Length: 221
Image: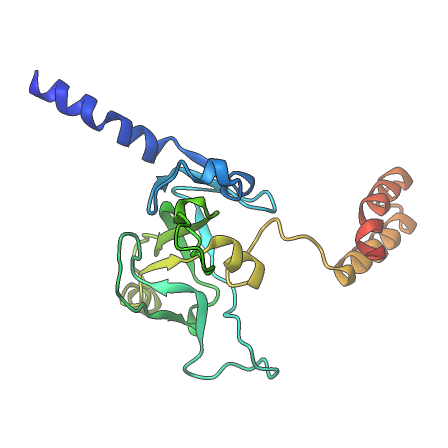
């Protein structure tokens, strides 16, 4: 009987943290955002570009964003949106940002959680829950068998990281986005390559025209 009571007491929390998915549109809908508390764990998140992140997915870290005109990294350069360790539920602590040398490494999603954006206005009655949500992702190094010196070196590296505000990390390139829209230059290059393939008989005229229609708005923007 006691076990049943405990189960039903924790059932709402379990449902909230295990089966709750979120989209970019919902995160920025104030009415929807107000139903969430800071640090609420969600099961999946679909980004602005339609990239869905689930617990258990493997993410690839991109290059650290730097403000200098010279794009060469210095030894002490760090990521802006990826920190070392856990941040969920931690307050009053200054976090350590991930060194830029971790570009290209991978991490497995352990959990995803939300926070409300900080209110910077002057209304003392403003409720922080009336602010949009931003999504954070806690990742750990992939588990693999250690066979080489490199594998042991990776095991001793920073294994736990938190991506703070997944949208900013994707937009800045600090996290690789598989759904990243093509740039104008990339679209032009792809169209030229497709035209060459059509002339070689490796691509039909219909396929080329379909691709041209898709790329034209990007090229003309």
